[in-house]
Image (tube, rainbow, N blue to C red; front, side):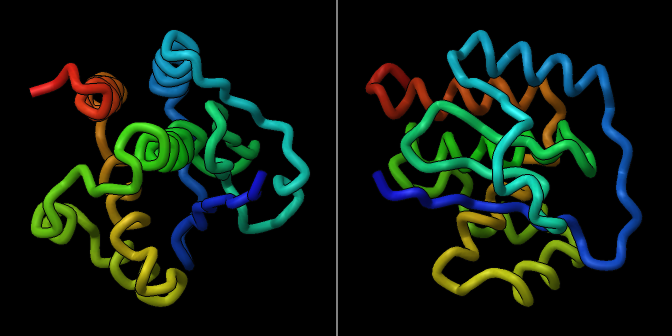
Amino acid sequence: MDLLAFFFLWPLGRSQPRTDQAAWQQLTAGFAERGIAVVSQHPRCTEPNLDGLYVRGRREVVVCERSDLSSTLRHEGWHLVQSLCLFDRPWLEPAEVERRLSRNDRRELQALVKPERWAREAEARVMAQLNPTAYLAAMDEACRESSGKGR
């Protein structure tokens, strides 16, 4: 099995945000209900700039114990949705992604992400901005549509 990991680097030059514990609990419970494991122990968590990762093909998201855990879970969780549910198709229209990206996100994506991966990373950053209820609903909708039960 190819081990492809997607990682999320927290913004350059920003202080580390605190985790919203209520959001974290809602998200981890939601992931568990959907059969997705959230783990914090992974050999790559020793990398100083790695906040989390999704290993393609697995129903598991790694959230390293640093930074804003709930935001990292939403970001990496969306990579799982992109891979397992959307089969690497975009969920959001490019114009919506552009509109919802912050200036810092645009700058970091340009500096840190290869052009062929930009849309995927940008969409995951936008989805990580959603509140837990909206995020879990979007996750359900994206996965339902991929199984032919959607719109």
